[in-house]
Image 1 (cartoon, helix red, strand yellow):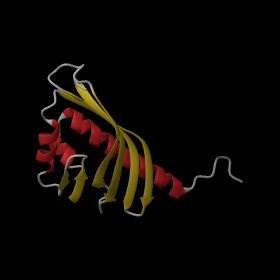
Image 2 (image 1 turned 90 degrees about the horizontal axis):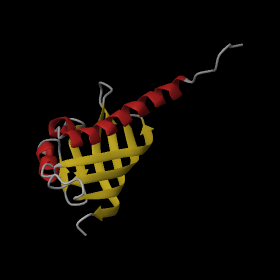
Image 3 (image 1 turned 45 degrees about the horizontal axis):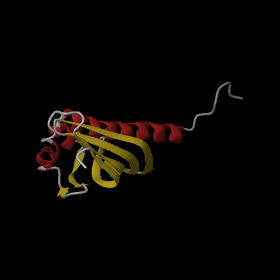
Length: 148
């Protein structure tokens, strides 16, 4: 008889991969808010797709510039991705996570618009074991604008 709990190695590996995927998603939000457009783009596969509520961009090439054009004019942003529901199938993962993003205009913290909803994300695991984002679709549920 064993003195300790029985550990299922496949379950341990799954939790390890879930943690790695969550780290990518947290970096996704952090790099946007730090305005680190290049690091943000480096989280994606070469053949990625980013679907925002306003536009679609395909491919890692030009992604940093696309995102900078979209968000670079704000004084500050605050993106949150949470409640990650992660399904892994071999070297692909499908994630639904909650989205909350605030966009501050003109340096006035009371002049902003915010959106909430869902990020639907697909990630692929590379041969080196690194998870990269293959696609993100932003699905807004609500929006608040202090100018309205």
